[in-house]
Amino acid sequence: MKRCFLVVIDSLGVGEAPDANEYDDIGANTLGNVAKHIDGVNLPNFNRLGFGKITNVKGMETKHIGTVGRLSELSIGNDSTTGHWELAGLITEKEFKTFPNGFPQKLMEQIEKEANCKFIGNISASGTEIIENLGEHHLKTKELILYTSSDSVFQIAAHEDVCSLKDLYRICEIARKYCDEYNIGRVIARPFLGSIGNFTRTYDRKDFGMNPPGETILSYLFKNNFKTYAIGKIADLFGTNYLHNDVHTEGDQNGLDILIEDIKSGEHNFTFVNLVDLDMLYGHREDPVGYYKGLQLIDNSLEIVMQNMQKDDLLILTGDHGTDPTDGKTDHSREYVPFVAYKINGKAKYIGDVEGFTNIASTIAEFFNLENIFPGKSFLNQI
Image (cartoon, rainbow, N blue to C red; front, side, top):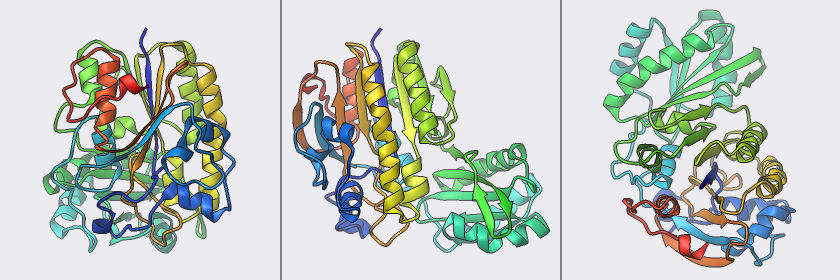
């Protein structure tokens, strides 16, 4: 059975994109700058596959066993939704709306009325900081913490002792309905635990994204009777209509363990994985040392992934945007993402810099002997 494993290492940018100046991201290079900050990395499997070939990474060589290059984004916007959708073959031509000065009062009132809740905050802020600043008030009044960022996100934070997960998800589902009217990319539930001064966000975060407005590699494969499987937040970004199975993860190690079990079991044709910790825990928090530790965790499991692949399996590693933890900003950075493809007894090719994340969807379509319906080209004959 043909199998493809597409692993999105969330936030793993590999150098400023051609239009980085439009996003104030000149000089961004998430992987390269992390390596420079810690004076060189020791990531033997990243090194062997070829990440050091596509950008300057201190501690990595340019020799490689995979087919490697960099892809620049065609979509307008710089967030997880646009990045993942384009990897799956769908270019976003209308930018999701952002609200740096807070959301309209009418939108808040609509949600509060139907969900029977009240919001506080309604500002652009760091998630950890706003929870610390408003957490005590939230515990006393039971008002939910609402905030956003430079991305198109409507984020609702609540302590699980104040608002159960079930109720928080219900409120987010109601918010999703109204946020559609404002073209807001994601509604995000941000549960947390702990006491004042010691709050901790949990892995029960859940994203409620808009449904993709067109064909993606998931819908295309599903309609052609290939078994699809989502690991991590993929279902939050694409919905579950075209998934045979999906699973929520509690961190990157959990996601990698589930991926390895799937590789061993051979139950699915296409497995779409998101590893979110580098972005969520380290990139947005400007923590390059933690980012490197997260890379080491992934690198350790990559060896097991490759050892358990079968002869005809295809593994593709990529990113959805950058989040350079050394650039002095807590937001995503407009960067190239890696294209690293590996097959047992495959070729070692360097494809250079290529426009369009959509080339990945085109490659996967050809891998499954389907017509390329996506606005990209396939690299299959170079893998």
